[in-house]
Each structure stands twice: as C-alpha cells, then as structure tokens.
Length: 340
Image (cartoon, rainbow, N blue to C red; front, top):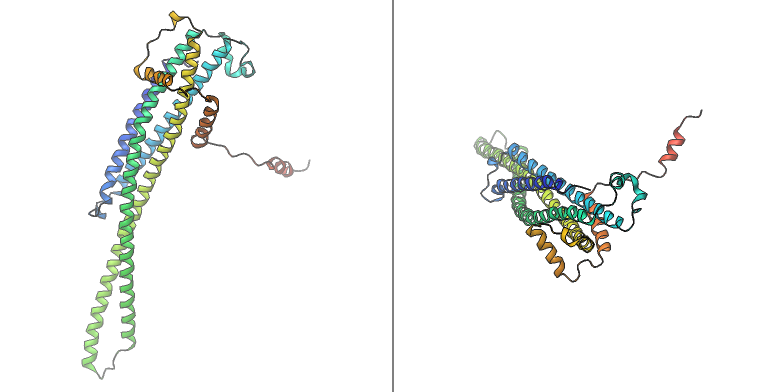
C-alpha cells in the first residue's frame, strides 16, 4: 500500500501548482481588463507579451488539473487497497484472481487492522487537504471566469461598434465613388471653361474626401483586427477557466464520496482493532470530516451506487478515451495480404 508519508510531497506539489495557477490567472485577467474599457487604446495592446501571459496561464491551469487529478486517482488506489486488505482479514484468498496487482501485498500476508488504519488515516488526511484546495480553487477560478466573460462582452461590443462604423464609412465611400464616376462621364465640353474649372475643383475635393474616407476605413479595419485578436485571446482564457471549474466539480464530487467511503472503512476497522493501538493523532480537518460524517444520518447510504456514478462522471470528463478500433479492420487487413 502507498506509505503515509508519500502523500506529503504530492499534496505540496498540488498546493504549489494551484498557487501558481491562481496567480497567473489573476494576472492574465487583470492585464487584459484594460482593453475591455471604453478608453482602451488599440495602440497599447502588446500582443506578444499578452499572448505569452495567457498561454502560460492556460498551461499552468492544465498542469494544476493534471497534478490534482493524479492525486485523486492515487488516493482512490490507496483506498481500494485498504478495502482489499480489510476484506482479506476475513478471507485470505480475496484478490488472488488478480495476482499481478497484489503480488507484493500477498507476499507479506494480510495486514493487521491497526496498520490498515494508519495507512487509511494518511489517505484521509491527504483527502482533507485536497478537499480544502478544491474549495479554495473553485471560487477563485469562478471569479476569474466571470470577470473574463464580462471583459469579453466589452471587447465584443467595441468590435460590434467598429463593424457599424466600417459599414457607414463604406457606404460613404461607395456614394462618393459613384458620384465621381458620374462626374467623369458627364464632364462639360472645353467650350464651357468656367464651368469646367469649377467642376474640376469640386471633383478634386471629392477625390480628396474619398481618399480620407478610405484612410478612415483602413484605420477602422485595423482596429477591428486588433479587437478580434483580443476576442480570440479572451475566449481561449475563458475556455480554460471554464474547463477548470468543470474539472474541479468532477474531482470534488468524486473526492466527497471517496472521503465518505474512507471514513466508513475506517470506522469498520476501528471496531476490529485493539482499542489501545488505534489511538492516532489526526489533524483538525480530518476530525471535522469524521464529525460531519457522524452527524449526517444519510452518510454511507447507497455508497456503492453513488461511488459508481461519480467514478463514471470522473472518467467521462477527465480521463482520456481511446477510440475503439473498427470491427472490420481485421478483415480489411486480411484481405490486403498478398496471396502466397
């Protein structure tokens, strides 16, 4: 079984990675916030810096999810082994059908209830620490996500205004171009010098106006490109934060039921251990989990079915799936073989 001290490093790694992820997420949201305000200037956007900042934040969020996921699974494996050792107290043949997994455990024989309690208590202590980290992470990432969404809405609104402005400028440009085309086709003859001179001056003024309108359109199009690029950055960060919230929900949901399973197993073991040898120093968070379990009249109710459900949700949302190979692949391979 996983030794009690082996969880210390894993919990520390999860906590440190979470602190880094929270710091980077807050920094990315704060940096992007200035571009969502009405006074935000497109010239102030430093895309290489800000894209790097967001990319590093997303990578840290993925790393935090990965290390937290690993710890949840490691704790679950430790609980499965504690449960197996508990059942072997009554039947030493339990688990022989899976000798590969239990070879080292079976070599040393069944564990005493007191030893299983020590290992299970370490697992429960790590679970309590991880539960606190989930409760710390969820509101922070939720706040970052909502702030990011509000800022994204602001940038989208600015881009929508630019779309309207561009359409208006394009209509002005089309009208001027059409007017100039009409004037070129209907120039007065050289016999009307005064009229021709006046129209030429008007024509040059309209050409200058058209050039100015075209420059306005180019500037607006440039601003729109910047806003669209910002939207892409915001959407990437928002998607990563939303994924974190969903992942924490799945991991916390599983951990809640797993903690209940561990406490139920712990209480079963304590009834079978020698009273004098079961005394163990527990942290305040572990004691509070046990007290909450004892105060809940529904604790342990339908535990196997609830665990199967949260495990299924956990695997579906967080664990990679390999696509099943098509059934006819083997036939295709056989048919492709050259005749001997």
